[in-house]
Image (tube, rainbow, N blue to C red; front, side):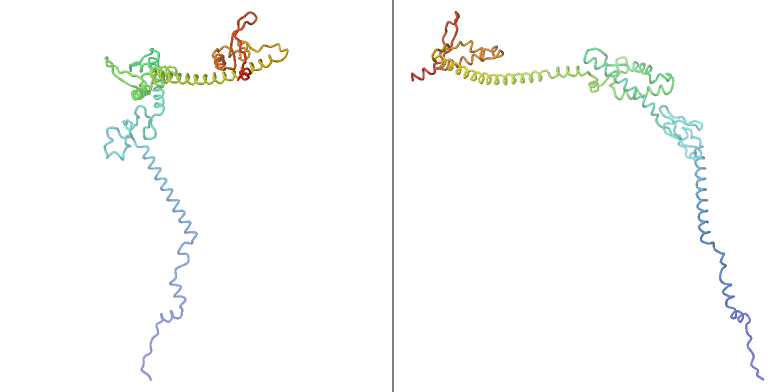
Length: 347
């Protein structure tokens, strides 16, 4: 009988080796442990909506907390310890007991004070009104000797009180007072100022600005008086040049017209001489000079004796024409007779 001992089998090992599928199933996680793709996207969407809602609520809370903060008093603006408890008082504003009051000429806009455009517009119109009155008065003084030059500040303020732009406000109204103050500041920047002997401030339209308020006739008259010497010299040159041109043109006209009439006179005298030589001719060989003149000249030219004098000078220089007095119908007349053919025969 053999004494060799028999090995004992491990029951666990045999069972595990005999069932491998059971071991794998114990190591793999269950299928429903992780969310599906659709569930994951849905989770992200929910988280995003929750975050946006939280941020919005936080912003609204901060805004409400910020807007409801009282304003720090003007004297405590420099204190950093109160910056989280109250709003700093804005520029151009006065804060008292947590309330904001904007300075004159400014209006409240949220937590700030902005300049009031209506006040500036009224002040601008008042400036234009004062400027027109003072400059027109000064222009009348320079042109016609009437009107005024300097106007006292008190008179301007009284005139502003009666202006229609300030009629709706009482004299004690802050808007009324500030508008006048704003207008006077603008007036002081545009108009010329001085202090008179009584210590009163006065205003005057500047000399450069008043030129735009002068009437055209006044500007023309002053320009002529300032440039009188130049204008006289230019007029003298124009008149002298015009007279010289007229003299040259007249001399040329007299010369041209005189020669034209002279040739017509010669033609008429020559024709009269030839007609008188015909048999039984009843015409005379001579022609009365005055009749010839009236025949050739127009009524307008007869009023200018220089034209016919030019013709007489040319006839006198011509040896072919004789000039002599003759008794015609009981009156002594100067007649002209053509001698050109006789001279030709003698030569």
